[in-house]
Image (tube, rainbow, N blue to C red; front, top):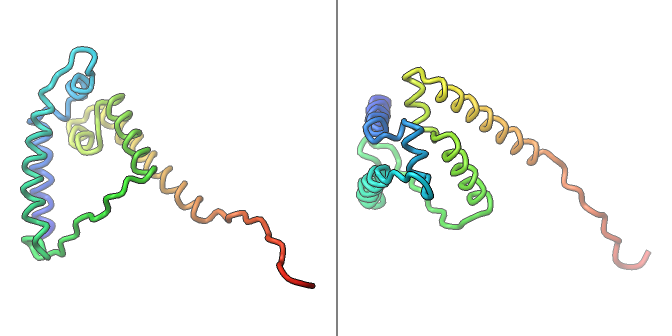
Length: 153
């Protein structure tokens, strides 16, 4: 039942992205072009999504389990770390340059659009590069300067 529910939710999400115009890179870039031919219509799509999500989160936070019985795992972290800020900036730059973010790109990929295919490939390469860098940084030995021994010899 969880798989069927996930499939239904994914299809509903994809349909919402298509109907809202989020799969059209030109429309997204026009929304982000505050100094030019700004198209505010996506603000209504985002505002509607925020309203629906706010109601769902208000109900979910008081439940120990989802409607299908899975544990309710909601995020609790509230601190702004440099990694989060850097990731947000990179995400925004990529969104503005390409006109895609991951969800709409995957939905658009289903239509066979070459731009969506290129974006998804670049996204996957970026994810793999990040994972590789994370593993490398966790493995890399930390260089410590030896401290002189205190006390008499």
